[in-house]
Amino acid sequence: MGRSYAGILGPLAFGVVVARSLWEGSSVEATLKAAPLALFAFAAIGYAIGLVGEKTIVGAVETEFHAKLQAEESAETVATTETNTTGGADQPN
Image (cartoon, rainbow, N blue to C red; front, side, top):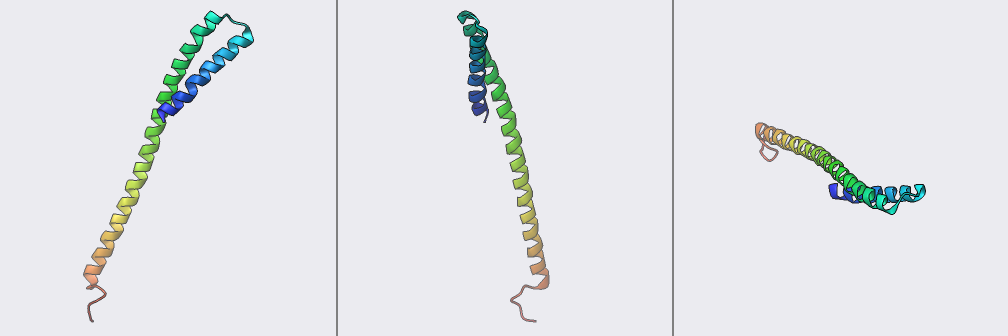
C-alpha cells in the first residue's frame, strides 16, 4: 500500500509543479530543480501514509479475526462441556 501511495503522490506532485511552472512562465531550470524535489518528497510522504494505513487495516482485520476465532472456540468448549455433563445424546435413559 505504501508503494501504491508513493507511486501516485510523487508523479502527481511532479505534474503539479510542471503545470504551475508553465502557468506562471517559470524558467526551465527552476522547474527542473523543483519538480524532482516535489516528486521525491511527496513519494516519501505517500509511502509513509501508505505504511501507516496498511498497518492500521491489518491490525483491525487481525483483531476481528482473533475475536471471531476465540468466540468459536468458546462456543465449541461450551458445547463439548454440555455434551459431557448430560451424557451425550446416544446414551439410553
